[in-house]
Image (cartoon, rainbow over all chains, first blue to last red; front, top):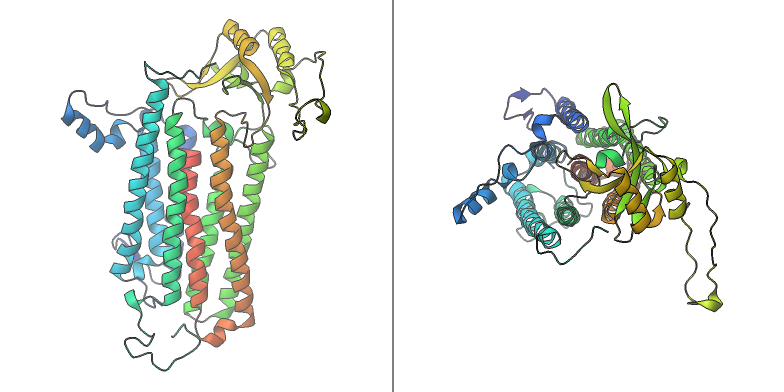
Length: 148
Length: 333
């Protein structure tokens, strides 16, 4: 059982006197992020609704570039913001509520790296495949008609 | 503080059972194993949701148009408000849980009891809210017509609100004009004996068509999304043509077979993912209740350690963690 708690978040920029205070501090931060998400979700500012960058045209290296930059080339900035905010929330829930901050480093890595690696893999495979099936349905030479 | 009840007397020896790899007790480690594997299950579901959504990327329902209801506020369109409330409730119950764990570290039985109780209440409110959300979704609001190809056609009209032209949905109840129609009952003797007659939709397509002809400003909207992120509204002539030629079934609400909001897969994934998560919350509440009574009975006081509260807490926070992702991918993105 972890007895000592690290009583700071944001790399020591926000320090707390007791563990209880830290919990309330984290709650305040998580609530703030949720409010930002909801406000963005309701008002959907125009500037975040269209991608900031078009896919790069041309050969092999352009394709590689598109893959590397895919979060900004193919994703609406609003969705990217939502996903980043979600990961931030997940971090603070895992680190402060689930006490990962107080566990040994190797335990943290064991839990986080396994998950992150496998989840990234799953997402890549399935989203790539989903995009491909979309093209099969909607390409110029699509043999399937579904608008009837 | 030793968390094991039984003592073997060989704890200090390497293989005696007293060693704690990664300085975490056996129970906590097992809880983490479970959490990591369960996280993979949930990410499998969410990735499958992403797959289906990418497959129908230009016709997926817009969540803001689907989840617009808040209890006690009838007829108002308030997207996201209620889900945000649910999210907050779950985070709040996570906080009371972590406060209970903290009180457990200080061996403060009274505080652990109170915080565990608040956590259970929070969980119950969340499960109740989710049940309400399901009921509203199944109930549906405007209704639609499903085409032969399985697409959804919805109805609405352009109205000017504050000088801005908006597409306001029209409900099928307001649209339908009763028509005389013959109906042949399906009986066992003159068909497949093992097939029962299914439930009838509230209206026939002919009734809706008659209503559409009579109301000249009503237009049909299909599920394809245009460049501005809105569903495509058809012209008057095209609207009539689509309903007449392709309309097959009137749908109201959503279930595993039809979905008035658009692609049926959306409803399927909604029921599956939020249902699986809701089941986790429910089992979390039940486990919390068991631990709550153990706390009251003084089990952990006698054991000298409240580590059990911490382990259950891990599970409870995990449920919260999953919800954060479900919230993002179902309601926001």
